[in-house]
Image 1 (cartoon, helix red, strand yellow):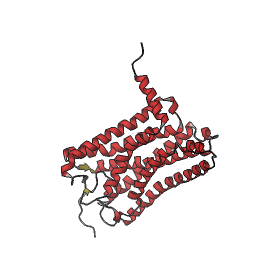
Image 2 (tube, one colour):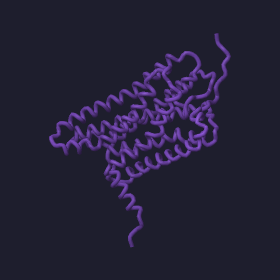
Image 3 (cartoon, rainbow, N blue to C red):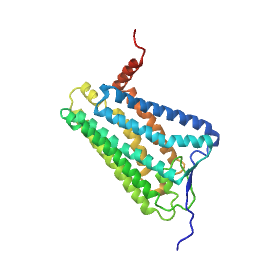
Image 4 (tube, rainbow, N blue to C red):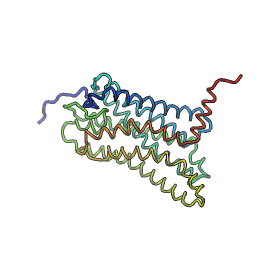
Length: 312
């Protein structure tokens, strides 16, 4: 028989409210991380856009990744800073849905974009002669556009699906953002079928690109091992470690969060894992790709020289 239920019009993001004595420290920490993340990734976007030496497929995808990371962290951190500063942790249902949409959009896009970057490395190392044709400007635009389109579809599909389910209280989300697994905890009734659909969709989105990445690096390693000189092998592999580090950080946490049943959700540890890939990983992107990258450092030096005072 139907029961009387109240429609939930807003949620409360519990976040770090239990750490009452650390609110000031957390605000300062997340503000610093956010500013550094935006500045570092924006610098990469500007350098790749302005420097002709960086107008290659690898840096085209890197510019997309940096743009994505700016959006990724901007979806979560400013609201978190507001909550830490004011103590007001309420978010309207529509705002929660909007945050979930963009968070899923950027996350799904990154899954596909990292796979495209792996294909770029495969083509550059394993198919050097036809590489300009395999990764033409049109192909790069198609791959990047497909990644963003896939992210938009995933975000729209999952958000519409989740917020079409009944919420009848409580409305406290055990998280600092409207993360899909955390919001699912508040759905009324039996959600086993919904949960299975989410896991299958996440597995398809995460494991398929991850499998393509593993396959690409399998071919890359096989090609590198056939290079006779150690110097040649090192040179061929030198552009891969940065991408591999980002892949391990992103996919490791994404697999842990999304490819598992709802019953295993841990409100104590899961937000900390989400914090890692939603806040920490975006700041590592410019560090990983710039400190070990001679091309980026050279482009930065040229840009600084252009901005310097003109000689009289």
